[in-house]
Image (cartoon, rainbow, N blue to C red):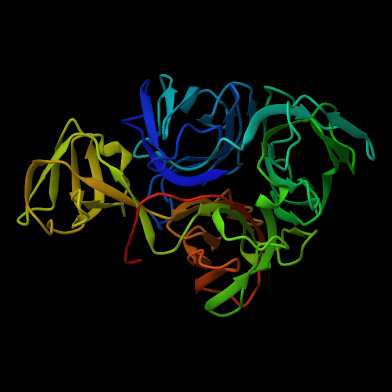
Amino acid sequence: MKTCVVRRRFYSTEADNATVDIDLEPNFGVPKAIAVFYVENNSATDTFNTALGFRNFGIGFCGGGVTTCCNIAIQDNVDPTSAQRSHFTSRIISASNTARSTTFYRADVVSFLDSKVRITFTNQTPQTNGHLDAIIWAVTGDDVSAAVGISSFNGTAGGTRLYSQLAFQPDFVMISSCNTTSGQTLSSHAELTFGVATRSPLQQAAIGFSYNTNADPTALGTTLGDNTIANFIRGTTFATCDITAFSSSGWTMRTNNTLTANTVYNFLAVKSLSPSDFAIIDFTTPTATGTTQVGTGSSGFVPETAICVGTHVSTINSVANTQALGAEGFSIGAGSATSYAKLYNGNGTITYSTGSATVSGTGSSFFKFYPGINLYTPVGLSIGTVSSVTNATSLALTANALLSGTAVSYTYGTHGQHSLAYGDIDNDGGGSQVYSLASSRFYVSATAPSTITNQAYLNNFDTPTMSLGFTTANATTRKGFIVAFKGQNKSRRRALNT
């Protein structure tokens, strides 16, 4: 099994009725399936969004010829507030206003190429100065089977539903749901759950996020369950679903509380060489900065990649919805190392000079870059760090280039980890105050649209024990979980300062 994590920014001027390439790791191969986590944003990396009128967050899966996603949107700084949730059966990305009258971003067509994902956006009208920040997790390998699909929960409390349409016995599954039926959009309520499960040992974990504009004050909360794969918040309580057993071609899903009949969930299922190639690890944030050790379960492997899910929940299997926490939200991050970047060959050629911070390209695709990416010569000499992208052939560095070159080839390096945060101020009777953030950290949380309470790097995978290096901590602990993936990593790497 091979897995990789990349971050891609989709600029509004790039992703309008255009086909866009996402570069995976060099020599990764053709992916079998991908998960795309995306948030609508207007700010630089590690800076909060402060201007967009609507904020979208979504999760898309693609594999085996099936593409699906779920999406939530909340309108910012309005009273009364507005929100919506949507499910799509043939989109990988979707973002709009809460009335769904204006499409900001929509991508339907996805194709897998060698070390590349290609998606096609439709005609759209993005918000001014906005963009989408996305994290893409991909899996491939001769020893891997993967599938993406849609199934539904049994709506009766205690009822079960069997999914048995896979051509393999899954070792791992991740799901997402926004509590709708297939292809449905519902207004006044933004709701999202994301969960994971392993077959052997049978473990699962899930987060739930809910923003209900029909309540006064607005009902807002997050929850984290360590024995469920789906959590739907109901005020101060929640409804849960869990996988009770895996079969040779799927799993049995149990509904523990009443749900709307035929509520659907999207899934991405994977079979690897061994079921012990996956591990789910719960973690608690520290109350002081420093290193916190986390493991990789009983298998004790050295991970290749990991996905991190964080919440504002201080107690597992409870709902965080009090003013004391300041805001309710969640984050999803992914990565492979702290201080490494993988080098990619750049498109076309570039021209740069020690007397200027501007880099010009010929046949280049600078839209692949976002602030913080580093440019190098083909032999690994540093040219500079990207500050902003003007268009496909022009960008600005954070300072004058360290070298000079005219119409020469180049490489670029991306940081090994990223996270996306999304949430809102709690119990805000004067209207919503939504925040979104794209971070260069593996884990991040916030208690207001401008305050980071916890953030951490994922240290290098040198041993089976992973560690999170917290550079910001809070006296109130938070709960989350990490999914670790064993694999092989033959990509070229170069150490970078972080």
